[in-house]
Image (cartoon, rainbow, N blue to C red; front, side):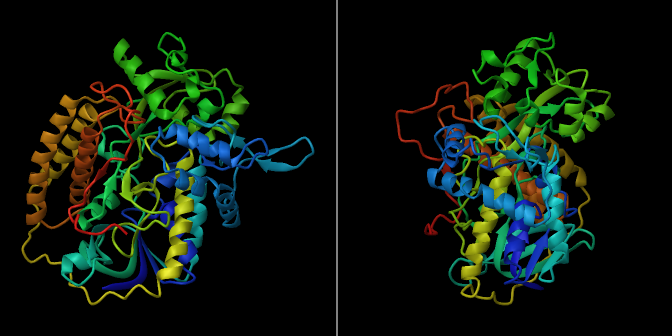
Length: 537
């Protein structure tokens, strides 16, 4: 039994942000499925949106975000997040993060601001094209040396422990069961509060820009515990991932298009102006659908992204990571275009929270991509994600500081029971089911959907869900099995949310309902939890 005041599941910017802001007041544990830095934050290239330029304004950033969200953003949450952008950048600088600078005519250095799709001004703070790596390593260096923070690598959360499950009074979180992957044993973590910061769920798709850890663990655990989940139909597909047989999940940052890169057909013809007057700087859902349309229309495997009209020095200095990676595959982006395809990238839906990161269960918080805060609506605007992580880490930590003394210490918890399970002799079932889920989600619940495709996907979900549950009940848990169990829940939530939305809006596009429905009050798609008798807090 491990005892902490705050247990944080996930080691990206959101989880580390909570930990570093609360650790002076509480004993904190952070658990990570693999290496601590193996998270979506580490691989984020673009940057962090913040209003820093005199020509920009908070109101402009708000309006850009609301427009990208296609009418489903919560305006109060958008204002809350956008207004804290400058403070978040200052906090990161205080933690030692270093961002790209530019020298003005008077010789003073300022943060270099770039522009990305959906933004009307340059407001993206970045560290060349490896912003996430800079943020993650800076925050992790502080967490590793803080006396009140314990770090657990290769520890995979299995399930939340709640009062409801143990018949111990009013519903609240008490901790979690966690698989120690190296010791092959299940540990019990007891905590006053648990923070879900596990990232998104894009690994439910065959092609994704996300690391292998993005299997929707926090969303699935919260759902099983009784939390409401919303907007899972809005899965963002990044328009430009590198297309190459050996290039696995490598993202070509939107910042290239912000600096003038053009999307071209195989014959060299630009095509984005035919789909949107903003061209390459249209929001991601529009660009991804345009590329998908052209690939299917022409029967080709990819289109091109070309920035070779810029100087070689500019390209190498602004995009060193992308330049080096492309060169590994024989592509010199200073001389030739880059072959690109869309890939699943960001989960706009998730666990419903309020402005303080609180979920439906007392003591349980969700931050970052795991949460559905109301910021993104039907489509996340570029570089608002790291901003959301940092703001809601601050919000959750502030709420925890106020509430920790009042949250009761959990009672003694029962240990994990493995008395009725054995070691699996059929691991091939897990790998086959993993592959099947990701393939049918890509084929039937991808960039363009139909009722028929969604029905096909739901039938496969129901069949696999039963098979996985039976397997889970008979064999000892492994990391692959835990992720598979979470993936099938995520797949079901995405399909059911998509089936409920009888319109096309933002990231959800269906051929059966190609227009947005503006004639009726628009409500976020919310699925009732298995424990719907819980009152909304």
